[in-house]
Amino acid sequence: MAVDYLDSVLDRDLKNVVLPIFDHPERMLERGRTTFGVEATDAAGAIRVLIHSNETWMTACAIAAAAELKLRELAGEFAELAQHSAGDIKLVARAAAVGLIPARDR
Image (cartoon, rainbow, N blue to C red; front, side, top):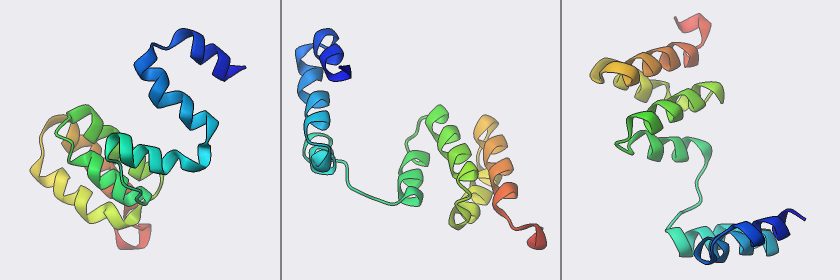
């Protein structure tokens, strides 16, 4: 039902990208790699890519997501961003760094 709806509202180019995902979900990773050059990674690796996107909003969202996911392996990177960034990135990175540091180490 949802696929039929998408088929009726998406333009042809977008259908060519989106609809095959529903037809063969097991091939989604392969499709992402061939269509967009996306490589599989873990959550921390994906966050690292996003924080270096040069998009302030994307960087801030990625930092907040890492904090929400408790990706402690990124705490050092966020502490660095908190020291060397400005504006919103500095604020979000500072909050994330503090949130990812275990209470016993604060």
